[in-house]
Length: 337
Image (cartoon, rainbow, N blue to C red):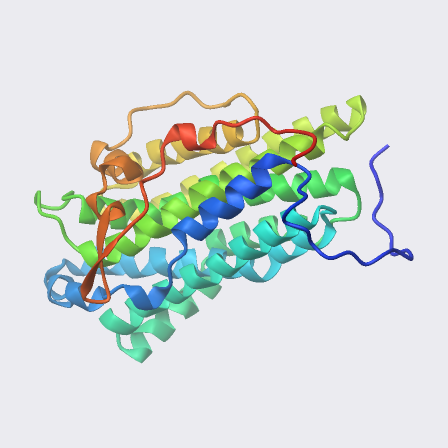
């Protein structure tokens, strides 16, 4: 049966980075350190002149998607990662998850940096009021948080990890579409809001690692379940994804229909939902449709010159090599010396 988590007398251990339980914790710890950044390293004020020339309808969607992303990052930083980190037993996993939770706070701060640059305080307050009132955003936050707040055994821990992967690999991305589309030249063939888009690219690079890492943890947790429990969670995973997709489609129509991008965003939702399932080691359930090539290009870190040399804080800073698919190809060992 699924292991139940109980408080019991135990020996308190210090983390030993020279003696690790497997290789992939070390790999992901290093990847997180390589990509570490803060909101103060970017200058979205470069976008102010462009922002003032954008159609009002585009401005409205842009600020709302950032508000929605801020809500989800807040939940992931303050509830999701801490709750999962609290119950996993491996100390190295706790550290990696805690680091990722910290980066989620940086993401939320980054959106506020953009708001501070582009909007008045009253306009920003209106965005956050909209976040609290939007039923589709509240649905997302409530459903994901439910799994985080109800971890009692291995089965519920697995489902909390699934919820985390769905958030990191799927639910964020409807909010990323417009910034990627604008910075890639989707409006009038001109790259717009590029400085803010650079922040989004950094966030996407983080989320890609978070989704893969927690997906691997989930796959390991899945192996601990009985065949009956595995059958039960398989059903719930697919049902949850379909429920989230139905809500995400409504969220997309609510936001993007006024600017004529809802159909393209819906294709993008399917792409990312399938990616989330693959991060969990499962077969995708949706038939993919072609996604907007500008946005697809924005997802590829290999095409981003600022992953090599990025203008940060007014100076040029050499960066680490961009992430590639093979960076995530490794064997999970039982022991790591």
